[in-house]
Each structure stands twice: as C-alpha cells, then as structure tokens.
Length: 122
Image (cartoon, rainbow, N blue to C red; front, side, top):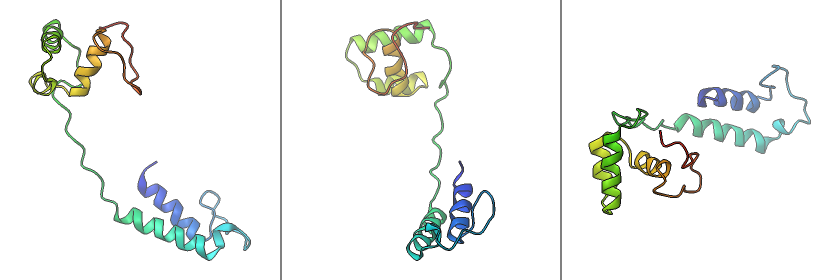
C-alpha cells in the first residue's frame, strides 16, 4: 500500500467515515472518540512530513548471472581472507551478493534470514 493511500484512509477515519463503504460511523464508534480522532490526525500529519528515502542505484551487475571468472576471483579472495568490499566494487555487485554467492558455492553457511541454500550454485 502506498503512503498516500494509507493517509487517505487515516484521514477518512479521522472524519468519522468508513473508508471502504463511505458510511458515517455510528456515534458510539471508537473512531468518533476525541483521543482517537486526535491520534488519527497526528498520524496523518506525520505521514505528510515523511520524506521518501532516495533509492540507491543498483550496481551494474546486480541480478546478472555469475561467470566462471567471477566465481574464481571470489573464491581466491575469500580463500586468502581478503576484504570483499573492493572485490564487490570491481565486480559491480554488492558485498551481500558476494556473501550470498559464497553460500551458494558452499563456502559459507547461510545466515539467519537468508532465503538461499547451498544447493545449485548456478
């Protein structure tokens, strides 16, 4: 859901109107309680003041298949205990992509939260 859509829903609730049906909420609805209305207005104003984060540009090779040469370079740097950051820049990939590739190649165990496995290093 986009923030503008969420803000419109919050504003509608703050006015005591059901955002889906457009019906006025009954007097005993929690949305008609003054503290709830104030909270909804505060949330709406906070959403107005949010600045979207600029998207980082993806590295040039992000999402592209790995070549045998790239795998060999990664293996050599990793085996030597080298820093992955300069290699990531040279390969046009992120450090996370290099670490993920090492997992796929069976050189590193998967970290918690990674959605990849060591099988099929293609």
